Image 1 (cartoon, rainbow, N blue to C red):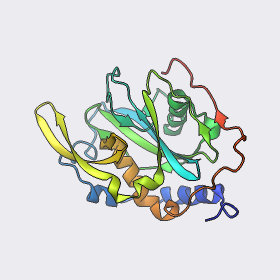
Image 2: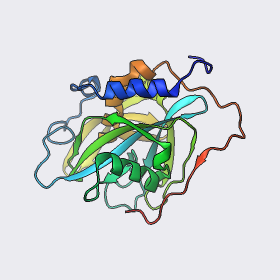
Image 3: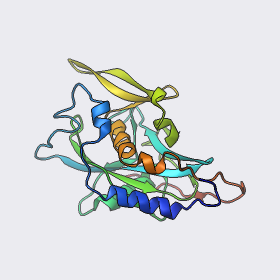
Image 4: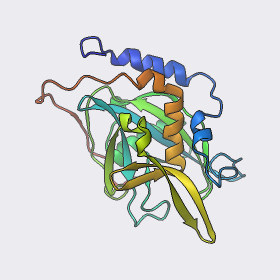
Length: 238
């Protein structure tokens, strides 16, 4: 699709309609099974589970759609050193969407006015941290200049969506958890590996929408002096 005919709103509406339809267990779940699948990421959530939200944000960068991921600092108590989507625990009285937009701003500096929520993906129970995570999909129609909160984000990874459509970026890795050692699928980017719940969220998104976005890329920016969306993250984070 050329830049003259590109319509962000049309793509957003198509994604919103697709994500609003009932979802079966995705192809990604069958193509990339883990040895600890049941009772972990896709198993039933026990009583007392903590609700959380993560956001898969797609945005234009250099003529390509990208997704921001965060490398979590080693100083964090949960999932330290892993790569995640922006998100966190839901506060009392907060909706899924309110939580997602708040976390986007607090964690990577993207305000609510810059992102449009398109829909939800399947909830995922994360065994290790006892979170029941509700993933959201959002879109920013303009280039975003991120302002990560360095207490939560060691590095921001801007990964082109097209790389997720390239089979050469997929592999398997061994993960050790106390006395357990198991194989899990992963996505490779530079010297990083994305696995676990984050990997599954992206795979479900692609399974449900790749026919809509696989050949549709945003036009490359022409005016390099055009201001980016730039906001500061709130501190301290919740």
